[in-house]
Amino acid sequence: MLELAILGLLKELPLHGYELKKRLNDSLGQFWRVSYGSLYPALARLEKLGAIEAVDPPPAAAAVFPATGSISGEAAAARLGLRRPLRRSGRTRKAYRIASRGQALFAELLRSDPAPGADEDRDFARKLAFCRHLEPAARLELLQRRRAQLADRLTRAREALGPPAPDRGPTPDRWTRALMEHETETAERDLDWVDSLIAAELQGGTP
Image (tube, rainbow, N blue to C red):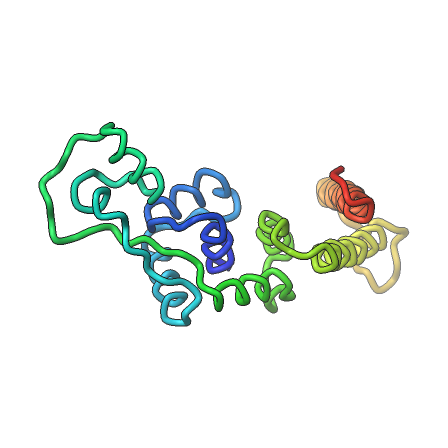
C-alpha cells in the first residue's frame, strides 16, 4: 500500500524522494512510517510501470542552490536570492510526478478490497486519507464496505459476550471478558463514526 501513498501525494505536486518520506512520516506516520529502504524500491517499481515519471528540476534550483525537497520551493528560493550559491555538481536530486497511468492505478488501489490477511483497520485508514480524490459514488462505496466490516465484527463480539454455550469452552475470566467488552465498545464507536461519515457523504457535506 506504499504505492497508494506515493501516488496520492504526487497527485498534489511533484516531489523528491526526501520530501515524500518527510510528508509520509510527518503527516501520516501512524499509517506509513517508511524508510528509504522501502521508499526508493517502491518509486522504482512505479516508474517502471509508467505510473510516475522523473521531472527535470528548474536549472537555477538544481545547479546552483541547495535542494528544499519541493521543486516550486527551490525555484522560488532561487528567484528571491534566499539561498547562497553552491558549487555545481554532476548529481541532482531526482523528483517525480504522477503520470496518466499512475492516475488510473491510484483510483484502482483506492477502490480495491483489502488483500487476504491484511489489517482491515489500517487498510481503511490509509485509503480514507486519500479518499477525497474519489468520485462521490466510489467514496460512498468505500465507506459502506467499511461499515459492513464493522457490523460483522460487532455481531461476533456481542455473540462472544453472550450467555455461555456448551460448544464455547470455558467461561472467560474477568480480564479476558474486560478485553472483549473493550473490543465491543470500540466496534460500536467505530460503527457510529462511519455512519456519520456516510450520512455526511449522502448530504454532500462534512460530519
